[in-house]
Amino acid sequence: MIYPLCDHLSSSTWTPWKMQNLDSLQMFKVDLRRQQISQIVEEVQRVVHHLTTEISLQDLRFQAVPYSDTYNGNIKVLAPSQFLVTVPVKGLVGYREAREQRWRYYTLRGTRLPCPLQDPEGLRQWLEAEQFMKSQWQWHEADVNIEGDIVPAKVLQVFRKLVENAIGTCHLSGKVSMLTQLSAVWVAVETSTCQVELELVPTVEIPTVWPEKARWPPCLKRWPSRQRVECIKSFGFALLACSNYHWQQSFLQAEQVLLDQLDEDGGCRRKCFQALRQMKEDVWCPGKRPVVTSHHLQTVLFWTCEKYPHPKDWQVFSKAFLRLVRKLHKCVSQHFLKHYFVRKSNLLQHASSGELDTVAQKLALFLKNPQIGLP
Image (cartoon, rainbow, N blue to C red; front, side, top):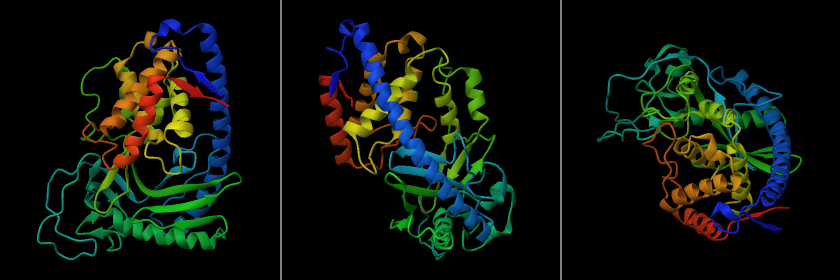
């Protein structure tokens, strides 16, 4: 069944009865999704804990992902069948920013290049073993290290073999299978309801340190508060092994803190985000590996919260929801969405232009005649 979000983009025709009706119906669908995802996450994290425990026994550089009865910060749901799993590494303590710039002339096989490698941009950076006050000798070995750099592609190569071996050792061959990718480590997991795909990413966790690239906030803003900013920065960041030469900065814990404390003033930000995610998954951008993920929607929400910081901006669901949709449409149409913390990074830079244009068309049609599809 299709329910109109509003008769026009004006809030004047939005009656309390329509608002209450839509809220209850939409939240029913959101609650159903939450129950389904919770069940899948429960099964996934048991598999991940089993696999990474075995991996940690085989190679001390990798840490087991803990099992949690509540929220598991190592498992990020990007879509109902696409998860990001960060696997912490061990033996690297006391991170500090690199002060000296140097050229790199090596290939992944260690041979010499005539011209230097491209320097990292946006969220990416080099990582040297010497940037840590304490580092286990294994991180200086040639299987992961070239000329002092800890190289993500080398780490992934070691990690991939460990995952393959662990699947067999843990007798999970009927439930877990490796997926062929260029560089990342992906596995498919059969759950009781569906098959999900996990990207397993070795991660260097760097608590209490805020990176120089994340010049946030650029100036005093009303949202979040100055106290909240300091709290968020205290969680630090992480470096993900996602590419060949450069590590990718990640702020999953800081982002989760922002999400957890969205509506302390009694607003409807969370409801709007949940409805936006539901529509994205059902109508605008469904599929196993969607071009627009929950992380993109989350970033759209953060930017909108910053632009509209007052509680009064988040009292009427219909107006606030349409505001988010318009922001999402603008970003997708322009193929440009700034990372919330590292603002020189475009989160849609490497996304398929054709897929983004398709989503933009669907969003444009929705904005012409706002409707929410409900069960």
